[in-house]
Image (tube, rainbow, N blue to C red):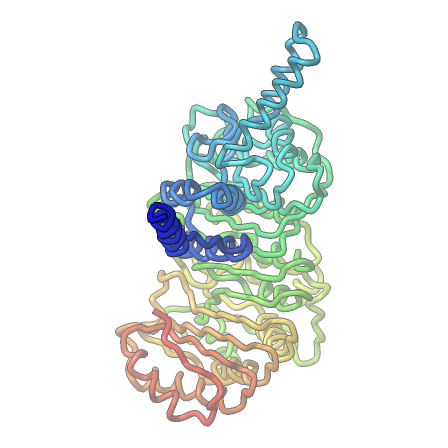
Length: 539
């Protein structure tokens, strides 16, 4: 009797202990949500991240392993390589090669083939990287060929292809060259999934653009049928012709365009692309345009502002040129107000009586001006020359910039009318919501040391911004410097404040934190009646 009571108590104690240590399994959907939060917090969204952390999460249990497999394969960028299919740190099982090996083994019977397929499936099941889940792949421009496209077509979940320069061809001994190579992109027409987006980021330095494509098997170029979202090009070294950049943009029709001349691989200084006018005419698909650290000619501004889908526009202008236009009109004699200028641009015709249709005056075919400035822009005094021959401002410059000693301090007779048209387009534009404008003369003309902005230029410029009803984020950079006095800076900021008084749409205004201007930030906030727009210092 006592023994039965003892056994009963023992079972009750064991039951209580089991209840105290009972494991409560959360629903899978909650587990997945928690895991996603951990992944987003612990795994940096960078090109290379710590995969050991991810492996630790994958070893928690089978459910976490499957989540790790999905997140790693779909979120991590993978790199295609002709020798290894993908780089070892992003290696993906090449099912095509396995299948080919199996198919080539004619001595195996059907049962053996089935067993091999089952083994392959089981192996894939336990691989952290699953090729069927990959969403993004990066490939070198010169690795685009029949073999790589066949492999890419095997990635059933692929959404994005990033085409770049992976610097495997920077050696001049390898004959690869971007010029005359756009036919390579014809291979991308063979993508089975037509919804895949193809993005481009081409870093064009000195070495990877010199050699001739003698080692590439040329195929017939076709119309490009795949979708391009982003086209981003970095370039440097002015002794190279970048005419192929325009050809690529023309063929690819990207939604987002970004051009940056800041790849410092040579000692030639900041570079300037002599094709912005032509690029701006290809404006039907642009939704975002960013021209970083390089100025665009006035006609390019005119065409970009006509882009029907453009919502983000960041660019540089030579404010010196624009201010000189207003100086010229103020003088009434066509002379530039530069002390060292002997140019006279008086027109033989009365512009007030001539109607200029700028939608028809730039009907030219693209011309690659090559490198350097052998074909510099020529200014003609008589407006009739431009009416008869048209206008191409691809190579138009005013101030000298970079290490180049070429400049043209003459103002074309149509420029004031073109600037007025640009102001009208800026004032009435109904698509742009994010606008960034920077003054950039290239640092070569030293204008800022002795001449201030013309008041007519500044007032007209601010009036057009004040009248715009769609821009919500605006960035203005006047490139203030140590030599400019407080009176000049106050004059500029007073114009900005008056613009804010009249604009009820702006939500954010960025002004760079530079010498002297940063301490004027509070004065703008005090002097304007606009309480909606937040003024921020851009560091």
